[in-house]
Figure (spheres, rainbow, N blue to C red):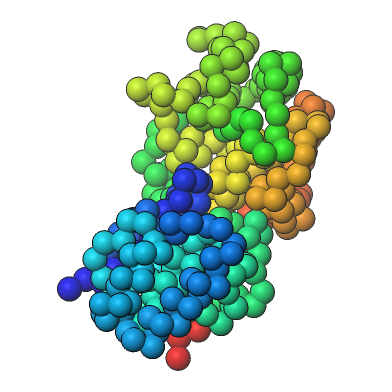
Length: 343
């Protein structure tokens, strides 16, 4: 029977993508099972009771009818049994208890991304640290978030992608915690991009996301009508022929990403492309994206700036003198550290 990796899914798409990426690349020999198991109640007053349940399950074993009843009472959507060879993969504080409850009374391993808040670190088999979700001590340290776009996939895709030269990519996100875009911000960005295209004699490949919105897309369509001498392609979210992130990265000599998306930053950096992380002039703090962008800005794997600075910045000079591509993709970092920790 093939070994299983149980992925505790949340309502957050980004977190789920990270967990699924780990399952796909770090545990390719495991059968992935994405489940929506969560606590019936997250009230803090119940935490001591949940910890007692874990103690009881560890004492009785997971197959004891009382142990199974306790999990059913505490958790939603519990189906089947956890086996000793299983790996349970989770992220964020609300999923610490479910992961520990499922593993209690078995020899199943618990892998967790970030800093645990409700349980000591030694209760986890493996703790994964990233610039966005740091944890000390840790077992695996990644320089980006886990993503579906890996350097190996990018390199293979790039070889098979036919494109003209001098294409720069722009991956657009949208409103998020700390980030607020209005029509004026989008219009200024679009017109500055048009000037950059003329200055460097490049064409833009622009890709939008669900958070970009129709108003922003309309602005970019107005500034870059098709055909336009400054536009290679405008790929809007929901279009039948919309390019994937990997398509966009494979076509681009330089890629710009709006800093509201930690996943887009991670994908670009993992592919070792000169990356420009841009943000509106006035932004609040985003605990997921800012530490990640700051880390890579200091490392030289990307350059970080406000959107009103891009028009005057010398990108070819930065690329030739200061750009330092990531040495190892996140999958390579994981594999290297996992092998080093093997007995």
